[in-house]
Length: 163
Image (cartoon, rainbow, N blue to C red; front, side):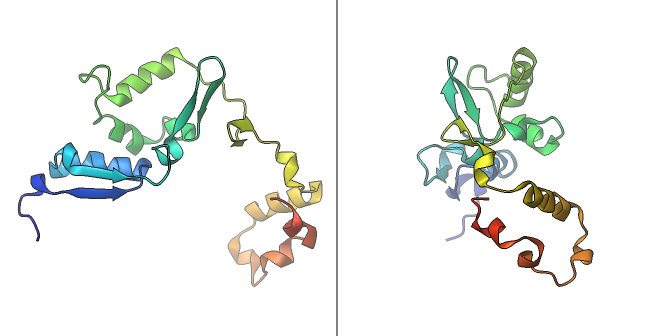
């Protein structure tokens, strides 16, 4: 039965990643749906999708979605401006984040992690030539590839690597 009053709607969102969380915020903000009527379902043990985080002050933190905090992500920051801080509801998560980023400068020391540890990318087993072929492929136009298949671009050992 379709409800005429959106405010009373019950909404179920699959996934607690940035898209699911954004959906919940805009349902509250734009559709006036009560937050307690929005249910976010997550299959993983940790909520947040690629924006989850873990760690502690002594050993450091792992924040897979850290790249999303770059200032040019205007829609992301606009979204956070509607979410009140847990510590002070008069302050938005955006403003709280701005203040935090001014106090604590990121010291990221790795781009690829597995189980919270730096991933040794040399374990992918690509030769220097294969690495160069990969870089070349990123710069060629799709039109110039014609009807080439990926097997035409890389040698057989590329497909035997862990890459």
